[in-house]
Length: 318
Image (tube, rainbow, N blue to C red; front, side, top):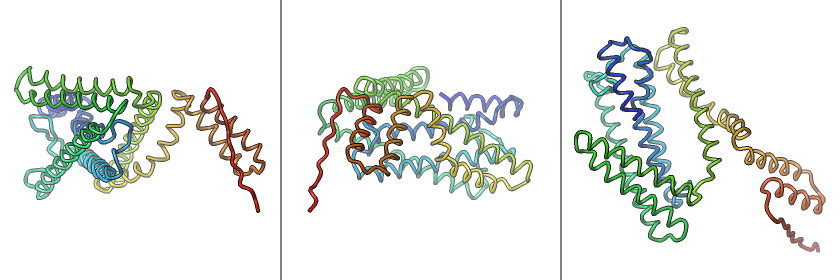
């Protein structure tokens, strides 16, 4: 939906009003959002139902898939920002930016990269779906119920996307219906069968949203400062901004996540603090009885179990 709306607004701004509408550059940045949506959709299959790949062999697929999606997203964003800064904001009737002119020799490289990326994503999607089907055949209990909901939602999505090839209202309605049913089925698996701790999902979502907003603002600020004030070449400015954002990601994410957990996931935050304090005290502890009592107290505070018992096997010294 974001891609569609951004495309319509880009056409209205750059083709009909010749850049006279406000925030047209935002529409250009948001228009490739469907690519990121496709990558995130594929992660649902790769990491369902417990947030981990089905086996160690699938970690390579996960790294290849995630790396391809990240490279494509950064590449598209960098070229779009460069086009906006260089005032080369021409769009086609579908609202897509002419990232590379037809006479540029790099046009063939761009099209080849696009074809390879789409093929790679499609292969990973099909492989992960096949892997989940195989996992479903050998699963039981709660996991089998989770995978049933995923398969049902996937079937509805495939049917909706297939009917979406029909032009007109029926095609658009089928496309949206397929997405809705798929999201609904995954939501049932999450909430009904305890796929994730929903408080942790909310805190992580808020944390990554804040980090993304800060890094995007930093990225745009560095590019504008370098090109408009320092008069540095656009390509160099984009490269410096990308490296700065990548270097700041993990430190910023940890700091922001700690602040979000303190406000929205207090139980988890308090538990982490209690465990960290116990680990620090354990470094200097020499009394076994004191360690046992401290361990039981920390577990009681962090997890609040109904009962705590500590059993220590001490080997005899010769």
